[in-house]
Length: 423
Image (cartoon, rainbow, N blue to C red):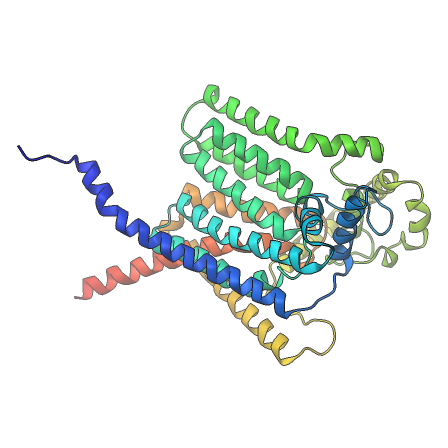
């Protein structure tokens, strides 16, 4: 009697070549994206300034045995995750030069490309949509250039994509392991860029819509929370001992004040341009925590006394956050810079146009798409409370790439069906 193969085995055998082709295409996209980022950091030569210089100093200070201290002597003003987990290891292994850290950024970018594919899969994309999501992020020009900068967003981006993958998986197939990974990623984000904790709303909604009752879901939520706390606890204890409070950083009140004071316009501004400018140095000498708390109280007081102005300013920040990149750099730009900015603008307009077109497609009215939209909205809302710097949008751009890929795939299917009907 001939051997009979089960229908499932036959289907798996038939799908194997297609899966291998997809894996090969994904590997090629990741490799091209990585090489583009490596080439960018080799060609460019931009000295670290502002936050980038602070992160470099924190890593070098740690390696010198002085702890994580910035150029102003602050011990918890800036988020510690990027200098701690990326810069310090790179400098320890290869010296204080920038190239090793920038190559680490390029590798983080490659990880983000692969994660775009994984998130798109969890969001229900077909093979074309999955590969297109990865390709969109691989080709997005600013993501190449940010590999040159010592910016925490290089680490935040793959961590946020990991959280989004976990949320989508929990919504479909909740498990203790995925909840634990989600908590781990949230713990790392708390130390790296705590504005990304806005994605807690996405994870919470994912659990709410997941199959099963509260008896099944509560242990998962507890596992994620406890894991996140376990990851962040050493840093909180360090700050309790070092600055006198178990805080993730001491810039919360400072940033709230910069975004909510009589001179605020929605964008980042120097403290010297605020009513606190003249007394800022004296306030700093009272300590990081005290200075932040004082500025936070003054910002809250301004919000209470000017609710209409606060609401209008918050709306302006949302518009600024998503405004097309038409701004120019400092000084007269080279032909290469001008061309790069034009490509950036074209890519941004394409991605946003596709994402907005999805509002009209029934295929995009799914739970997975709603979670992606919530991620975009929640992270935007955080910056409506504080202020806008254009690089703060960068960790959201791969999510926009995923949404745009889903829409492009749906539009292609519509077009294919229409062509087939005409035949």
